[in-house]
Length: 269
Ligand code: HPA
Image 1 (cartoon, rainbow, N blue to C red):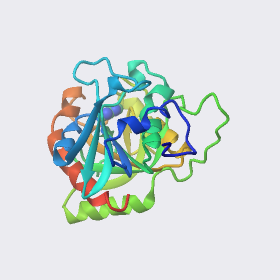
Image 2: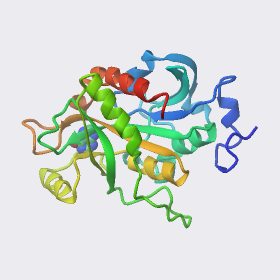
Image 3: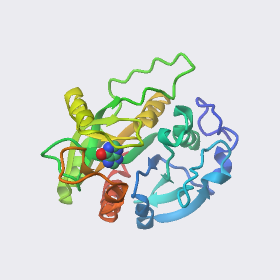
């Protein structure tokens, strides 16, 4: 059975074999750095290692090979990708967006893209969240390269779902603001001069993922929501230097809070 007749891609022949029996995921979630623990919050119906899926890039970093988790959230079937690959590891734009095409083949209609990001806004301290209203693609590539694919990017991130996130944040006393996410290639963090430039360009937060996936998802007609966990002050704004340890640290609270957002969204996403 072909679940989504409009979409034909590299996963067409595998999609149905991957799904647990009677499982129809309504939405997909890509987890950003340090957010993997959120899986423990939900009923796990099934799990497949990325290495078992033909055509899905597998990170070479030990312990980060990745798994696709089929979960039930408030009675809604969803698929969560625990582990993502990045341009800075040497993968292409096409490869880093393979998960979104797989999601589409599995029949999802919406995707939540999460990430860890540095904050540029003085009134938006690390430890909070930013729902994306828009992005700056500074990664100098696109998953749509190679085909004429002039996709409109006026409304990439779904406003109605952002309103649900804001409601969930205020009901649960979680710090959430909205803003513009700038995606850079990395893997090094920015210089303070680069951060000043990003601020001048209109960025509120900076990270190294998400936008290529968002572009791919819009090209497939999926609803997109982006959620950044603000893990640190962008370079030059804080007291200390940025380390990957700092970015991962304190993410166990973040995973719990993400669970709150996911439960709040599940019915309407
Ligand atoms: N810059 C880029 N990527 C990041 C940052 C940052 O400050 N924090 C987490 N990911």
